[in-house]
Image (cartoon, rainbow, N blue to C red; front, side):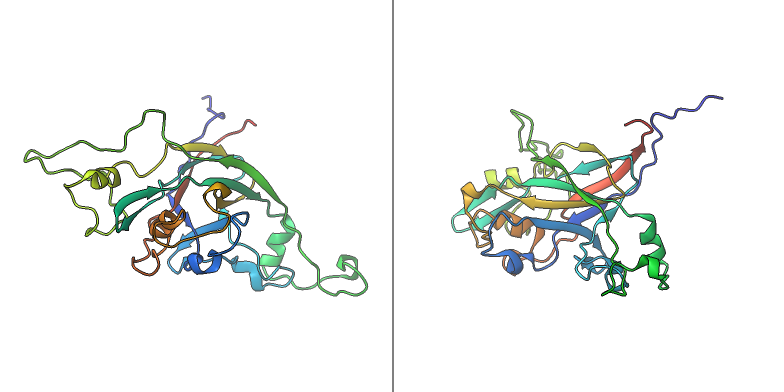
Length: 262
């Protein structure tokens, strides 16, 4: 019996990539030329450092990436980053740009991860070092700036039989600010919160993401209420400590297929 080798769907569950907790305090006042990295979210949060960082031969500040299948296709869903100001009450939406980064884990990496610590003289980097430094290739990938389709609408416009507005998704906002009925801001907030899905080929076996914005809205990261990056703090952070961290908010990624063609 013939076998389809061009597309072999092997979907995984969604995993979430988001900034580390406290990123507002870390990046506030720094140049927007410094992107904010997104890390895989786990039970202990979005940990920025790789679990292998303490092993011999690894850089202590190796960034945490998400493991993927090299050559596969991943589905990526980017969130609509928005926040609301209290006085005056208004929705603030800021467009951000993402860059994919790919890391290639070599065979020697597996040996180090298994705890192999014995090196011969042929493995020494120089006569002045007794520790072999592992090189993990990393490349910059596609640059993505999510956008709604031209003419796309945010309002949901759907109701129950008694004219109560329905909610499309769980949401990440304080109920006191957004009601099931009410003004135009509530309609916008309860509308679509994700941009159209993107499909990307994996050019490595680990995926990294960084986020940045145009300097036209300010040369430095500013998370104060009403500022350009207030929506980022409201969606991914704690909005200056006034909101809880929402672990489900982030960039959603899953593997959906394996391809045998370039």
